[in-house]
Image (cartoon, rainbow, N blue to C red; front, side):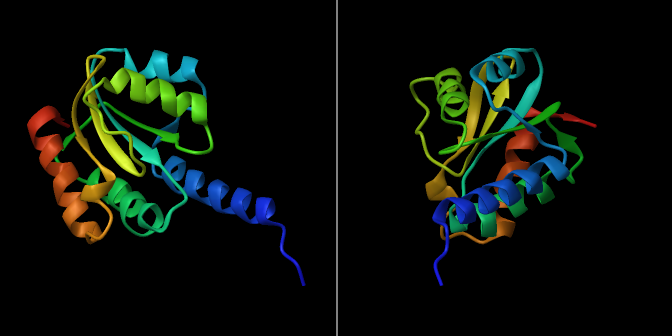
Length: 146
């Protein structure tokens, strides 16, 4: 019995996308969508999604649960590293030279500029609750009460 690797990866990527969009995140798949979304005024949480285990077991659950908080960003966005390569590259360009490209990761963008981030090294090997707490600390610092 053989398994088609591309079929398997497409299924995994589809599920990984759906988890976030079902949770209220808007998927940005082109550089143009990234520019339009991330250069507007207001505060946005951007999750750089991935198919790796720490994305599925830690980052995506944290992204979905962290938004249940008194202070939240105006917008929830996601780009998919390794899948929507140009959109991810454009997001990272907007994040600036100080951004450490990694996936999964999170960035807080305020009025078109990245003001904070959580890199893979702060996700991988951590439990989801500690990542939720970290995201909510960024909300506390950068977002308004809703």
